[in-house]
Amino acid sequence: MANKIPRVPVREQEPKVRAANFEEVCYGYNEEEALLEASRCLNCKNPRCVAACPVNIRIPDFIHQVLEGNFAEAAAVISQDSSLPSVCGRVCPQESQCEGSCVLGVKGEPVAIGKLERFVGDWKIENADRMPAPRIERNGRKVAVIGSGPSGLACASDLARMGYEVKIFEALHKVGGVLVYGIPEFRLPKDKIVAREVEAVKRLGVEIETDVIVGRTITIDELMNEEGYEAIFIGSGAGLPRFMGIPGENLNGVLSANEFLTRTNLMKAYDEEYDTPIYVGKRVVVVGGGNVAMDAVRTAKRLGAEATIVYRRSEKELPARAEEVHHAKEEGIEFRMLTNPISIIGDERGWVTGIRCIEMELGEPDASGRRSPVEKAGSEFEIPCDVVIMALGTSPNPLLKMTTSGLETNRKGCLVADEHGATTREGIFAGGDAVTGAATVILAMGAGRKAARAIDEYLKNK
Image (cartoon, rainbow, N blue to C red; front, side, top):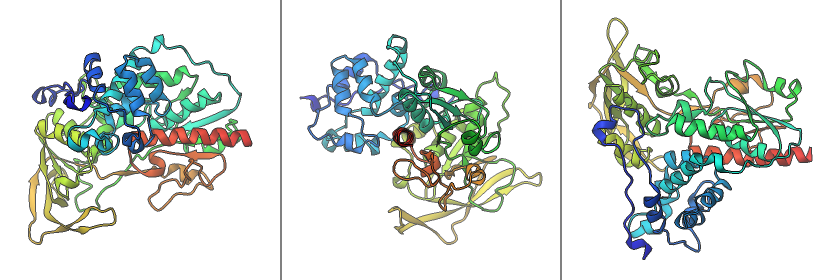
């Protein structure tokens, strides 16, 4: 019986070794391991894993193709619903999505759907040259895409396949959005995976222009009125960091996880060949409990600091993926739970010397269903540190709203868009973190694909 086989473990770098390098932690499956893991799938009649996937990948179908050794066919099944399998296989929160709903997980271990998706995605990248190039008939109509993150890349590649002339405008000097500036090398290798996914988009005829800040370099109105774009997709992400508003936040040595990760990942501060300034000191405290907090704290550790997570709820409420938390603990990261900063302490030169915190206890559930943390009176204490990194979430950059009339945002600064991605202004569509606020790669990619279909529909009826 398939479910009598234990879940095939995945090979990983040793914790002691990897805590000092930026190479990928998880090695993924080889062919033999992938075939064995695929044999565990029960091929359910009503697969709950498909319903739990944000883009409804036909999971049993692709796993069946892996089992038969038809990797090209497996890749074709996935590509009907997902354009970034190598990325999603690495960074998706599978335990709360597909794998969390796998029937085998009720009594034992669920099928390693994420690791199988990664195997297929990597096989596709390795064999890209052997795949026949898609035959596309151009329709001569132009669509602009703002942002080259997961939603922009997905939207652009789908529109290009439909025959549109597509150009992506990217604000930074490298293509990939959060995939290059946010997610560290040790979780998502840039040259091996991201750069090659971008190449696949270019092969479809998509043009990409970097160093263009739409709203500054050129406006949306100019793109439509002067450059002849008939529709625009905004996939500009959520790059505006949040802070706590506590005393001492403007001391030297306090920074957002966004800036810290951008310096390390995009500007390669971890590589001695690059002269990117980055300061971690001897002790770093990261405030927050999401995946970005884990990325920041594990990066600080690799840059040589003693690194601590401070989170105001208990471990059970940590929003980060279980795998990230497990890896962080193996690497020697300290977790201070039920702890909330109240001020940051500095010296006479204006540099951080510590963070003052208060202990918390959990009260009644709040609107999100998580139990609200309440301060314990008289429990203040200090943690000495040189650097404090705030990883409290991000919201969209207000620049596009400020420079484009008729584009509505909600009170959190997110663009208002309907279920197809149409914004409050005709011809302008949006998706991903610019609409939802910081969320997952797969949701952003799904929104980009949905918007591509809506743009096609809109332009055909125009």
